[in-house]
Length: 549
Image (cartoon, rainbow, N blue to C red; front, side, top):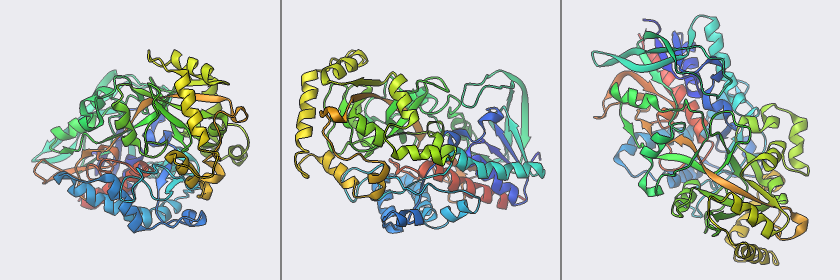
């Protein structure tokens, strides 16, 4: 045996699993097809948001949360309705309890810290029993994605120094080794060394083969978001036709290869049609990888129009119902839509997902952080406004619509119609009440002090020049997360088509649908992807370490 356990994938779930294996006194080898500079995978690029329940941070912001409310929200969002949801549902329940009990203290013991203002992501479809978070639960890591990766990278590197762990970068797994029905190792090719920066495509030139043997293999290889053809193959009919044009929220090496390789080794993939893609994607004006997209994390005030200029109906407001909005927009026959807003809205309500787009939080820079409450848009947002191809800025509606028509993919918008929409919206602000559901949602959001402080602009008239200039933002579909995956029991052991355990094979992270083969069901409450990697990676590492002789 080359090791007791082999971990396939050096992202967050892989690092967590490897740390647990090594600290249990076992030897672990981590293999990854990318070079060392991509250690941490997609978690490194993330905003670092974590779903937590009934925390000191929530209570300090006046939020009353509970396990019962969180589980109600989870079930309303997941809508579990399939026989194969047996294990995903058990994982979901275990995860909600983890998020309410041990998760925060476990991370805190490793030096992890949280930004004090709790965000309110995925605000829901307007029903108490339906999709969405009833209260703010999005806890931002102080240090964003790199700050979350760091404790686990540190733990693994200490294990490397002590001889209990080893990295094998540029090792691409092509096959699981099966002996007497049990997984006993991996086989693949060694790729040529690469010094490309993190996230950029590395060469696929192979220079050698390799075989590694162990008593257990943990697959933590991520999802399919970088493979747009695979995304389209699995696209569910319930969301309409797959888009012809998408931008990539993840690098190309997030390719889904290990799903088919694990299937060939006896594992079962369930819920492949469940996926999570965003509709507020921007083409990165300074891309790291090909077709690089960045998601807007929007506040609720922007007016949302489809490609033909029609306002989206309730409850499809910014930040409310990601997949509901995606389904609606797919029915329009176009792959893009629009936000129309003002300078006041962009200054208060636009945040960009990603560690590199939040240098204040990522760099733990208090001076830079103070700029979020001062006048002006955050630096990265202003850079997109100035340089991004999806932005139009103008002082009049006619100028704005003329700019929109230049990049509206051949669809002609009528300036008079859009101006009339804005006039009718603005009339609803003559009183502190009205029938416009979106403005009612904005007013309600500002009752939460976190939103009022840094997230939601005071209601104002868009056509008042004092609130301008006017801004239009073209929104693209952005690939991101795989919600289905390898079916696992509560010990993260992979299951075969008949429900039997595949001996020696475990899975964690996105490749396992963040637990069980899809613990989110049909929807995410946000902050649950990184948390799913933490929980499933920890479970898989501990279970594999306990199982080996």
